[in-house]
Length: 343
Image (cartoon, rainbow, N blue to C red; front, side, top):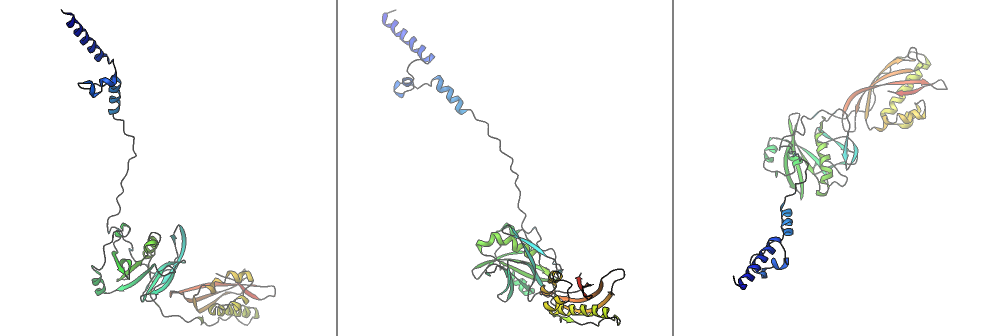
């Protein structure tokens, strides 16, 4: 073998050893200028292996999907009850506000109006809403023609809070304002309710208006009653003390019916009692007293005298009911019978 061949052979062996052991200048080996395909070093290969190994995905909590109520799946007003002088409270902007019955001025219906709202007239109808009269509810009675005319008059709406109600007809634009419209039945007659709410007030007021509509009650309009004392005084005999007790009671009833606070106070056993019973005069009810019965002057085994009084009462909203109270009397330091309680 020639010397040249020996040198070449040794060089090839040396190069092969360098390549197999990763020796030499890595930058030259991996450089495209080194000629041939670049070979990764052992370190590079190890990194590549790490980089392609998938990491286990972090555990995620299971998400339970709750489907919203189906369209027209909920009855808002199952049946309109008769008014019974009950009370209500509604949450408005995180605060519970007391509400009292407020009758429609032309229809035999009424809503429970929060004390922060007012009743007014809007487009010939009774309206209940905010003091600025920009957000309100109105009601109207429908005949067959009105009900038929309403078909197709309303946009279907896209608020799921409303779409679930069977009574919901949709929305319509009235005078540049959108009204949400419902139809319901009371005493076999059809009625329509419109909820007018400004866009910026919708989130706060729509739930309240829905609750008010849900609580609609029925109350027939009655002619007004005549206030006063229309009864025959019971016979208490000739005893001066008994006659004085009867007269004190009659004076109290007359003051009560007339709303005469001064005369009412004069019949009371004490100023504290007068103050406690002022609500009988302040409740704006009309009283028609028609019967007075003696229970005892005094009641057997007691120091007090008592009468039972019956009356017809009409509230400021037109609700009429028969009622009654027991009027108790005690003698004061001067020996006169005075009103000690009305229960």
